[in-house]
Structure formats: C-alpha cells, structure tokens
Figure (tube, rainbow, N blue to C red):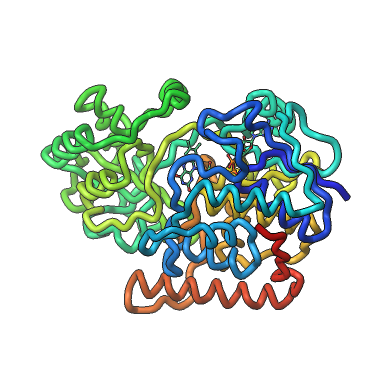
Length: 442
Ligand SMILES: Cc1cc2nc3c(=O)[nH]c(=O)nc-3n(C[C@H](O)[C@H](O)[C@H](O)COP(=O)(O)OP(=O)(O)OC[C@H]3O[C@@H](n4cnc5c(N)ncnc54)[C@H](O)[C@@H]3O)c2cc1C
C-alpha cells in the first residue's frame, strides 16, 4: 500500500511518520515554498504559524493530558516538541525553528517517506490523507467542495465562549425557553437577566475591551453574516438588546417581569456540564473576555472551558461527512486529518494526524471515550450539533465522571485525567505494537 498525505503541517507530518513507522510507503505533498499560505513564512514542515506554545503541560488541564497521552502512544511530533522545549513555566513552549527542523530530519531519515514540494490541486488517486490545514489552497478547496458539498465546508470559525455549568450562579440565571413563561430545569436555555443599569455598564465595558488585531486575510469575515458581539455593540448602544441579548418572551422568576436584556446560554454537551453563550462570538482578547463576560449577572464567577474567537479557517463538517475512522462517507479511500476536520489547535492537530496515521495503517481498536485522544476523535466524527464549530480539547468533551470528587474543580479534573490515563494504558496493553515508535533519528 502507498498513501498520499497532502500537507506537511502538524497533522500531515505526524500521520506520515506513523504510517512509515508501521511499514507503509508515503508520498508527502507540501506546496510550500512554491506556494505559501497567508500565515506560513518558511519552507519547513510542521511550522507553528503563530504562538510557539503548545499550551499547558499539566495533567489537570485537557491540553496537558492530551500531550501526555501522545507521549505514551509514541507520537513523533510530541517527541520533537520535548526535544526542542524552552522554559515556559507550566506550559510546553518550543524553539519553533528547531522544532520544524527536528521534524524535517525525522522525515528525511524515514526511507518510506518521499517528500514532494508541489501544490496538490486535485485529490490524488489511491489512499489519501488530506491534512491541508485551515489555510488549504483555493484549487484544492474546490476539489474538497466537490467531495463534501458546499454545505459541509466552512471558511471561518465564529466561536462563542463556553462556561462550566457548576460555576454559573443559578440563583440569578434561570432555565426557561422563550415564550414559555414557566421556569423549568429541563428547558433548553439558561438566561442571565440584566437590569437597565447592568446592561448599560456591560455595553460600555464591552466596547472598551481590548480586541485581537484582524489580519488582512481575515477581513472578509464580518461580511459573511456573523458579527462579533463587540462589533454589534459598536453599531449602537441598544443593538444588543434588539439582537443576541433581546429579552422578549422571557420572564425573570426573581422579579416576575421581563428583564431589560438577557444573555442566553445553550447546552454544549450531552452531559450538560458545559454551556455556550449564544451569539457571543468575539474578537476580544482572552483576558478581556474573562473580565467583561464576568459582568454578566450569574456569570460573576464563571470558569471558561473555552474562550471565544473568530478567524479564517477552512473546515469540513466532520461529523456530517466522516465516518468513525475519519474516512469520507462518500469515498472511503479519503481520510481527513488536522484542523480541516473541525478540531482546533496545534496539539489537537498533531493528535488528529496521529489517529489518521494509525487508523490508515490498520489500527482496529479506537481509543476509549474517556481519553483525550478518544475525545478528539469523537468530536470530529460524532458530535451532533446544528452549528458545528472548531473546538480545542477541553474537559467538556469528555464523558462526565460517574462519581464526582467533593473537593472542587481541580480535584475533578485530576480524577478525569487519572481515569483517562488508566483507560489509555488498558487500551495500549491491548495493542502492544502501539508503543513501538522507532525513532528515525534527528
Ligand atoms: C493564523 C493562524 C494562527 C494560529 N495560531 C495558533 C496558535 O497560536 N496556537 C494553536 O494551538 N493553534 C493555532 N492555530 C490553529 C491550528 O492549530 C494551526 O493552524 C495548525 O497548524 C493546524 O495544523 P494542520 O496540520 O491541520 O494544518 P497546517 O499546520 O496548516 O498544515 C497544512 C499544510 O498543508 C499545506 N497545504 C495547503 N494546501 C495545500 C495543497 N493544495 N497542496 C499541498 N500542500 C498544501 C500548507 O502549506 C501547510 O503546510 C492557528 C491557525 C491560524 C490560521
């Protein structure tokens, strides 16, 4: 068998190395340097396009747990990251050039990988892993549309923050669907009611909040119909009260009246542990999101599982078009991997590439649902939602614990991590070949 891997980014490099390590011949196609993306600046594989941090390296954080699982499974890019690590407290930051060069050497030393520097404009014949990333070239995008249909391909993400349910003050926020004046804990929405003073103060702080600078290639985003919440506030002080914060059809059980405005939260996962701020996609910086959104009545002590963002990002509706093995339902020789499947982040893309490489080389057993790897796989192939948006790894994607520790959030995260690593070790013991990562050298 010979597999074509399109894109020598994070997912593509990991997938290619895993395939070659399992004895599969690989043609790894990368369009740089002949054709660059708007964010990449080098000709090197596995380029980190923005931050040089792979985020937390601590087990009670979901990205830290995912990294530990990847290490235990023999991920090549995780090994490269550990080799190129630079001091960054509890996070894993790397020297980005050394990281890419280390991956480049791993690929060069792997005889079964042939690297080809040319743009792929049509889907290659035979078995393919498409890992062309969020900035996939236009001609290949057209080929992807012909496979998935334009309804299943999106060009930017508009992510609203997600809050841990246990951190919401349900003494203030109330469960109620619009136009159903009775409060009911089975309602689909949780509403945070504002008085006029609270609303005006919130709008003032939202408008003043520091924003992430928009890059040139992202400027078209706002014209595509999805405005950041602060841009709506900029258009008029009452715009939010007539838009995503409209109070019509709601009765605050605390006052018996319609609130002046309301923020609605909708369940983000089946377990109801994570709730999404409806219509609150934002370009505020992460620090400002925490400060400003904690002014929402009921969210004063909110713990954010995910913060909002908006940027150019081409991705397919993974759960609609992929099967559980990341293969296209309509053409099973094609597998998708990396951010293009609708996961988000460096480490998540490495994990997705790892899974694609293993699944393409014949791995039969899936990682258990309670592991971070299982959560990445299930998010991009099984999530049922009307509005599929890219997601980082977070504990909201994991099945809830059967028995919660009493000591609070940190203890709960530690228990989730412990359960995940136990599940991972059991899984690894069932597929002994998994840990056999033969380092092709640096
Ligand atoms: C501007 C920007 C900033 C980001 N910043 C961060 C951050 O700070 N932290 C974080 O965790 N995540 C960040 N991300 C998100 C994401 O994790 C990265 O984009 C990550 O690199 C995705 O990995 P990937 O392997 O899916 O795609 P990439 O790493 O982008 O790899 C895809 C590769 O495919 C190649 N390619 C594209 N089209 C073709 C074609 N037709 N033929 C051949 N090759 C092709 C590209 O040149 C590229 O090398 C950012 C994303 C963007 C767009």
